[in-house]
Image (tube, rainbow, N blue to C red; front, side, top):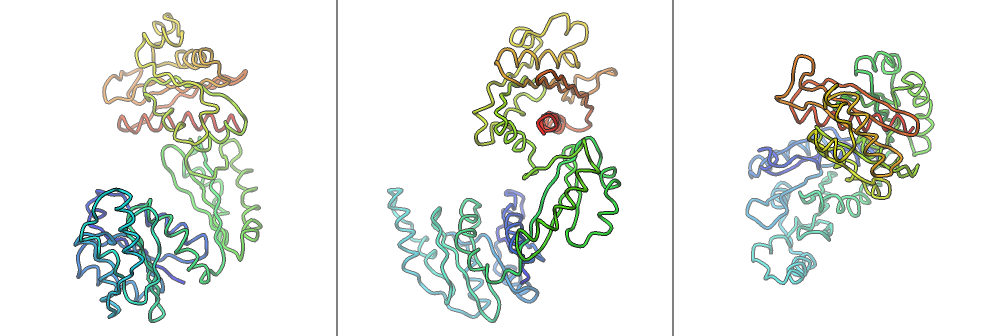
Length: 409
């Protein structure tokens, strides 16, 4: 079965909202072996929406739409689908009661405009929405399937997983499994060079590399009748990758290194303290976004000034006077101070010049030192990133996570 994901909403075209729905749906459909051939985004315009439905149904079997199910005048997705099929709109009493129930809970009167959320193209199978007023629908006509889902991800995702996905399972012709690997310390071209023969001769599994934030991601994807058959295809490729990229590669269930770090810290029950200067708490923010991290993350210190480095972390005045606040020596003492003061097993420190000003010939903007103290190991990494202040801060935090991930393998 071939699919088009059709996202309605002028706010998507204007850039006010990032279209995360299409990426999510593509991933979920791939997992059950349903091909996604097209992504389309269309504004809230009758003519263009109807044309989008016509084009989509001419080239695919399944059209999944998000957006346009609300109560306002520009929420017209259901009406456009009904018009395309020449179907009347049909009242659904249960959907009206659903909307009324939500307003009763809010202790507010239901606006008259919400009545339109109780009407669907005739013949629709209603998809409940426990997190909003807009129920969705599934309509099969003339051998084609349309699934209409709400736009907000917090409503769309549970509706798709709990109600739409079971309706699509009979059309699945297998499963697709993927594994991701993070490569650090090598560029994308060097990484690809080491595995070029695998990439050149790929068929199933397929291998792809892409870069971002100072890392290279290698994604390996296999398609087979079931998950265990996929594993049989993936295992030999994984063994080869780990051998060829040894010392630079680690396995991750997510492309987010903070999640990987948090999980490893929790699994090993290793406590952590951070000392951040130029990143200003960004590393702590990334880690504290991970559930369960409170069991191992003891303390985060933002020591932006020289005085705070000395008074809070115990960095020696002579170290800063001799080597500067941005130096490997200061970074190590910051990490040691955070570890000692918090009583943690691991200390991590970041100090650098994020810019856009403050650089010199000897210490340019983008120069960053990351230090990690763990057991009897002291790891210091010198970085020199081009780019904006935001880029330098982001890549510095990710570099610290990468060092931790290597140490925690």
